[in-house]
Image (tube, rainbow, N blue to C red):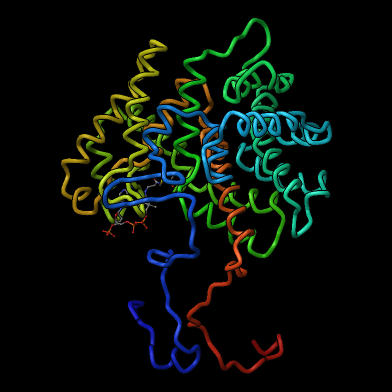
Length: 406
Ligand code: ACO
């Protein structure tokens, strides 16, 4: 009834009683045991484990196992999972050739989504609506291996370089990715860079029912295959209000730098309701105190830049912006704080990852979360096809006119 200009009694007569919740601000779409988030207190836990502890002590593959299978793996379980992923480290020649057909300057998120979708054509054995346990384990591991490959291969395509294949027996997951991106000659992945990447992927690994995860669940609820569901999640993530914010943040910081570095001017722009500009990397639907991931990333950003002896003026601009915004009543009253994307781009930039690949890095991190949520959904007896209702506000009584009388 909060909707303006609606005739409530007419709507009741037409539709019956349904609730409207624009943007699903207060509507739970499912019950889930994967990720706990307390937005008021800035708490994030995967399967009960604090994000701070996982980021410090764990690695991405272990966290992927935790999300997907519900508990931290013991040594045997981790070996089994790692070997399963490794067994899918080769990419079919047809898929590699497909990637070479895209324009070199295509946005890698569009390529990732398209190539993932196309995998349903190359792997029909995984399209059954009810996969056996073996097949389910296999397709999940295959995606964890292949999304990394697709991301790195398309980077090489975009640079006009030969592809470097995965070497899972030589490198851990993050080092393998770096080698696929920059390998050749006497390149050796830097362990500090691999460590920073590992932390970023862990921090992005799941975030309960956000836009892309809800998309994966919604598409999957129709029993569409996992390739289609994950490809849809990638498309949802691409938008600048969601995962695309990490690219938008760095572009905004560069714009501020090119403009002379006056970040207060940009804060004013963000506050001006007649200006569509928003402070990218600020604000969150659920976090109303702070985003725990942003705190970890800010610290990681300082550490990695120092270790790599990089001085990036964009980091100073970002810190200045944050400091000013946190003193400004507009941001304070609306509880707008830096989110996970505010500092992540500065780290990706320091790791030499091109700006248009930032959101692909987010997708690589979020993949285990999407898979875990999909698995939870298809295994739950409570699952029904996602089918929201609407409040109809159009005409209901039109007489058809032949075309020459309209
Ligand atoms: N800059 C300026 N004003 C903002 C910002 C911002 N970044 N974010 C929110 N606001 C203002 C809105 O204009 C609104 O003001 P009003 O009450 O005067 O109308 C108020 O704060 C509430 O904002 P909503 O858009 O209603 O909040 P919502 O929960 O729908 O949106 C979102 C959350 C999309 C994250 C928003 O804060 C935003 O656009 N942020 C910038 C983009 C971004 O960083 N996205 C990444 C989010 S994290 C992630 O997906 C990984």
